Image (cartoon, rainbow, N blue to C red; front, top):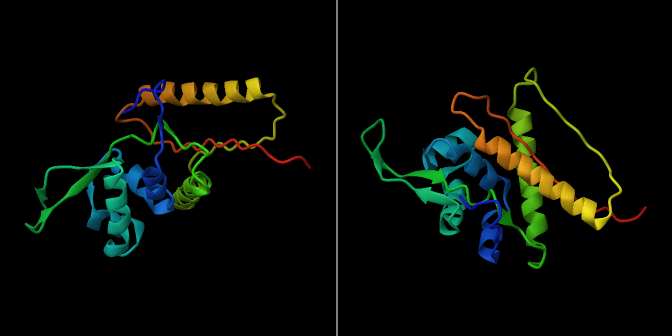
Length: 175
């Protein structure tokens, strides 16, 4: 995984691979457990051929790594994929047309799908705010959120509760 102080600028290929909510759901599912295209298709309720296009785009961009082939439960050979974590510190940039915005909407849509699948009785914590910040304070807020998420990511334990976090800050036009 890329260290937090060495963000890599996303290429147009990277951005195109990440413009669909399925891409983000695939990455989440493959971060802890390698999964095959068939397993992902079943879990996400989409046709394997539809999913394979997303899987290939993610693998070509380096966001999924192909694990060694293994024999499945019926004896057939299958190819599992594991998320590389390269999206964790990816700088989407703002100079690639509408692609960064499409990626951000895909992230929100993927998170929304995960919220819909979550147990409604499970603990949730939601905050929304509109802040009035000067450029320095805005940069500090983003840096501190990044540091906080990096800190808690480093403290993750295998037996801990999985928590999905979405941070998004966007400048609003004047009213």
